[in-house]
Length: 181
Image (cartoon, helix red, strand yellow):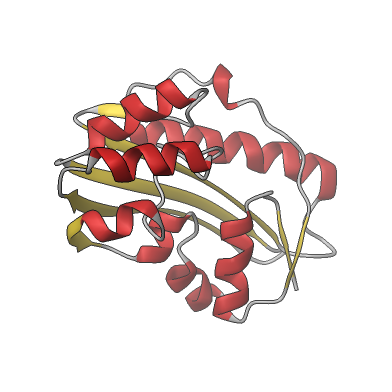
């Protein structure tokens, strides 16, 4: 049994599908305080900040600690979580017809070992159709998603090509994690 320090429904679903027993609880960390120009540096700093906050709250002696964060980047821009529907539209239009990279960092800590992994999955998207985009935005499913992106949902039908693990793009590289477990 591990402690997933994330409120993400998608991460919990990934662990369930992977057959990894877990409990889910976490403390908050303010990502807005991070100043980074590189997407990999940003996601590393965010994950490290979450790790330190959750380590202080829970430790790892009773249950291994698992912390993760994800960032989306396209056209040399870090695409964070959208704060409004207009922000989500602008973020998604940056990805439309372009290469979008989804980078996930995780820290897994037990009393005997510590894993830090940064994985990247690249998607080449066709241009998003306006009616589909409007429906997705109205659904609100983009809320709380890095880059307002849902490769398992809205974006799926627009994928022309993909390089990397789908689980990385969904927020947790379970393929790497299973090797360590």
